[in-house]
Image (tube, rainbow, N blue to C red; front, side, top):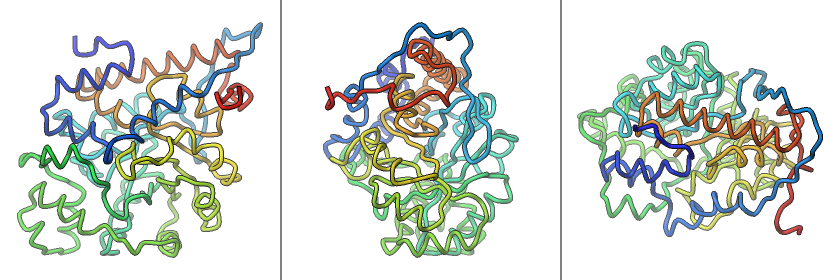
Length: 368
């Protein structure tokens, strides 16, 4: 069966069989030599667990809160571009399953499903809109207004992509978006803003991808965070913070949360694994909530991130691959595995709630 997997580490190989090369290489690829992509997973093996025993662990609760909203698992779906490349229902699968599991869902600007359709499938779920501050600020503001209208509870501003990283696999593959797919959000924004550029004249996917790349703004700086704050009351989450210095600046500029991310190793190669960045960023963030992604493949990884101070852990490639393999059934199986692994880890660690997970439950290899 398509969902006959028992570990998230199996998913990439299974997806390589299911997906065509154009889609698989796009999702799989990292920047340059993919050192950071590999480090994101390997770094978890350098952190050891330090269990306590003889504790009553008969009842386990995995509920927690982020931005004041209760979630049933401290695990969310990261923004994933062009998900209909992976499965015909694409974002419909991820949005609806996130609602079913009562976990946060993040919609990418490069979605192949519109914000309004995602809202229908996610219903009253906790959903965030990922965005970039584009050269044309009118487009950015239009995206924010539509997100507000459609009930998105947070804006996830990607800050580690003034340009796109060099992805050698994409260059070799010469990735193109199949003509039957549309970048629904970009198309809608371009049409509403009356953008009549050659690159979007035919509303074709690859033309819109070119349009998106052209709109990445290398002048974006901390003053633009103030501008974004001035146009919306929706919580702002900065995604792509990778050091304590920038975490402090995020606090100073009044954002609502920090998302530690290196883009799954797809932007700048040889940066640290995100789990290695967590301690200094959590320390610098003060009372701000901190989230993290990249390299998470099992429940012990989730536990370690929580022990280091993350409030929620987001997954990207595992969500893509499990959706590609089995649609809703595949993604549901992914959540079942992560939930089961997290619960069993908590029991073996001697804790019964997310709030009990503390840093004394882990020991970095470097301290042994």
